[in-house]
Image (cartoon, rainbow, N blue to C red; front, side):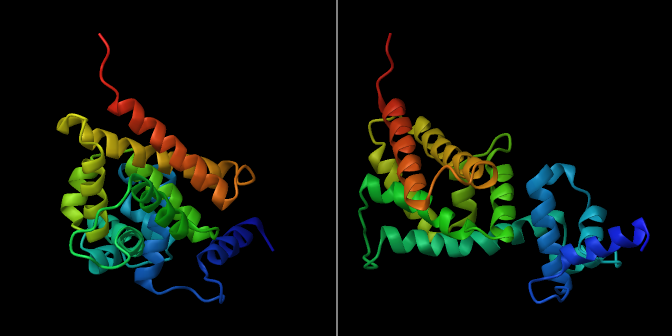
Length: 226
């Protein structure tokens, strides 16, 4: 077998699922986009690259399924954030009450644990971890704006309760504080999962991430000196 044939075979093998079959067009595009966006960021990935990695010869396939690259990006966000948000809501409001009040410990658990559950240990989860790290590190990332646009009940409740716990902090600074702990949590998780998987078990990471978030919030809540 020549080198070109071997490379083609390897590329096809990467696109196949666990059952050895090639995924459908929409799923293949989403899988390739998740990997490429996670590796290089949204702005650096061309549509042609996504389609080639997905094995799609039809150059209009992405537009047909998603409308645009932005629509594809949004579809990826929704695919993973929906189960995360439901898990977050279950943690913060397990009884389904109309006006739940969650402790700070519960808020931090709701921030970290659903992300950890969604990422898991499989290749798709690790690809999502890379994607999420790119998403939260974009210039101008604003968790409050993201929350308003998505309007997910779990995220809305988390943001509202975090605002309550940050009441001593000036309102203009609260969004920064909430966004910062999310970014730090994602960065910590990505570093652990992708680079140093032997450094924590699940419980150890949850404890470390929660302690780090608490320390950040204490620092941000402290009155300015001078």
